[in-house]
Image (cartoon, rainbow, N blue to C red):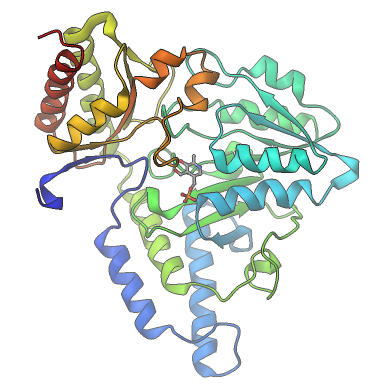
Length: 385
Ligand SMILES: Cc1ncc(COP(=O)(O)O)c(C=O)c1O
């Protein structure tokens, strides 16, 4: 099969880089090769472009250009937010609160900070995968420096009560970091209106190139840089700027935001129809994880009981459908996901899980075929004939 024959249902792992972003990348790579930090006419032009890119990215988020730090993606943005705040150790605040369903970019950095002396609290989630606000409130206090709760979970698509989390952090005088990597381009994201001090985005999830991202860093958030050296990105991220990557991501941001409204309702309806079809066909043998909570429009996390999700995903791949397993950021991992475990799923329910994440071009017919294949594969895998 050629690549174009596959139906790509793994957008949460990485969306295709859109043509406008590829064209912008090529234009910048061709013309803006000078180092913006140098001192000659071409460097001044590159510097002007760099300023413009900060202005444009800030314009999309409704923030100040000085609040934009371009990074290499979601992982680096999360790292800079967590380490940058915790190592600044403001007023003796040495505690970090994260939810148990954060991406590993947050959770593993939290663990590393813990090993270096930070006190880390892990907030539980409900059975539907929503952070438990009462439990969170009890964990946030006068010694909390930072609260990190994502906008929407990458495995289930479940949207978190971001405004309430922001309010809990604000009342305690703590900062709030929101990993919005999965949400940007699907929902309106204005960090100031949401009450976020820090917000992570990754270009690869909304049509920009892989290896691009940004951290929104609210003006008074003093951070300790993780990558040190030159003074780039307000002194927060050393290294010669990747102007082509920044430009390609910025154009993808602008287009994703412009096209957002009206685009995803259709996708949500197709996702819902797929889920209904699976329940009709497989009854109690299928579970839709997080489906009782508000979700992003394109993600479905499906547990097929008594089989392995990996077996289902392999079958679907051979039949022309690319779907994800528990977490796309853990290639080859067969342990059930920490997200599903935090939601209280048994090992067996979690191991039988696949993640379907549609892009805006999914058709009803493709989703119907996917549903039919899932049902047929399930019967075969269980030997039900
Ligand atoms: C919620 C979330 N945060 C962070 C990341 C890491 O982003 P990146 O791969 O751009 O480093 C991902 C990647 O899937 C993600 O889904």
